[in-house]
Amino acid sequence: MNKRNLRWITASTLVAEGFLMAFSLAPRSLAAEGDSEQVSNMLSETRSLAFQLRNDTAAMESFRRMNLDPMSHKVAINEIRDQINALGRQVNKLKALEAEAAPWQRTAIQRIDPYLEELGGYTSAIIERLNGDRTHTIVDYNDYLQANADYASDLYATLTDFAAFGNARGKVEDLGTKLEIPQR
Image (cartoon, rainbow, N blue to C red; front, side):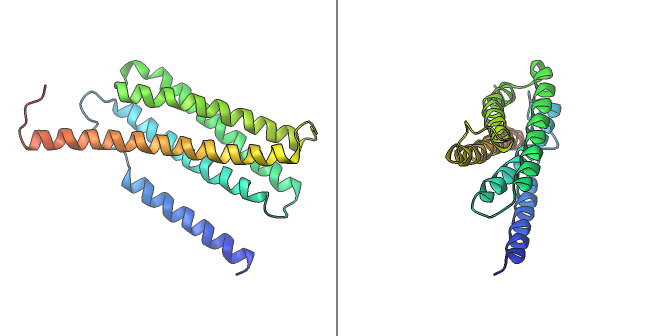
């Protein structure tokens, strides 16, 4: 199989996975009682940003196994840096809404920052290496790429788990109403 076919298959798989995840964990049209629908929607948008970041950090991590020119690395890491910054702006918007968020939503918001801090640190180190800072060895560089991919994947998984929790919580309340089970 040639590289072009491999890239097409990989891209097609990622697009299909994105559509499946978007539909399987789309935000509920009606938030569970006590949940902020606005926060739920913003968490869903944050999850979408994390999905793209996860894919891009994984792709960049795979660069180390290919013979790509340094410019490809620079373009990729600049895109990743921009995505991390976009996630940071999104988190700031979420923090502004924390007062109206349900406890589980506040927890989700608070869990994002540690991931962004780690991603920011590793991304900065990658950029330093690409800009000629030789205190970061090639072994370090490869570790930074792997760490970025791991943290981005973990962030996405965490946000996916919170989305599943919010959806499950809403479904339980809907079933309780349907079955006429008294609420506390």
